[in-house]
Image (cartoon, rainbow, N blue to C red; front, side, top):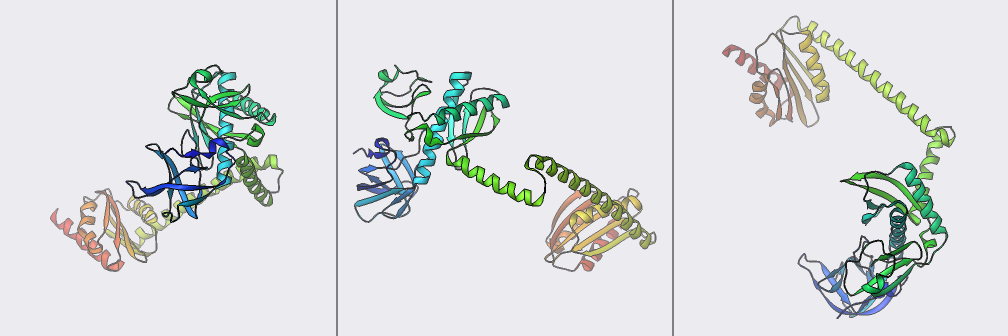
Length: 401
């Protein structure tokens, strides 16, 4: 039995009564129901499926599988008589986006000779792939203006079932790839296209279209757009952001971009200056550590909560100041130990091998080069004890050379 498709008879039906034909589970364990008739649109033609409920059970997917129109539900239905209700907000949004795509594609094709190769209706935005390598800002502005003009003219949007031969008498944008009867969507003097999607009665219900920009997609471009209530929602969101900015920056709207750019540039300059000052402090600290070591061949320090990045920078600075010395820097964290081992240019030590010999003490991991290595592990022993074991490993390696 073929399910009667109410969404083709009247796309504005959002509640219906029907009977269940069968229900079961697919090979993925999903429960599905087949009905005598339905207002739920299945995924197809770039348009997502409808959502809603059947006897209170949520419909999570709708697909045509092996000739069956399956409604996937969160739980099996008990009664054979079924009350269905679709999420009208989702349905009407899909109708607006899909009709907008027809108009956008028609104007790109008929006026500028740029055909559409695919359409995707997403949750936030929609996209069409256009068979061209680029789109100029001027062209986008012209097409967007033209589409919105046609929307405001409130053209009727008609759907007709007919044979392929009958459909071929219309100025189709692309040849039909089906046999038998075809469903033609007609926006007079704008678009004549075989399509199985849902559409409103007039272009005025599409409300408006806004292009968001394009990106390259293989050898084509992908144009992102909004239509219908999504345009109003995006405007509302942007307006709230703009209002918040105006409360922070007392400048006219048209000057906000430049003001924010100035703030960003100033922040980057401050960050750069802070980095320079931190580098200078590290150099001073390195010199102080070398002076305190009094020409010792090993410089050891244990810190509390110092980052591994800070240890690395300090270790590099110390060996620059003391090419005769090896350096052991350890940071005790709340639940781990981190370390940096380094050697000056005048020493012949393999700090990588030394690190590997002591890392089992903290079940640690690390790596680097013979002259500089970093790592970390669990806080199984305190920093001072770990530092002494590193010192012993350095002394052992020195004795074997």
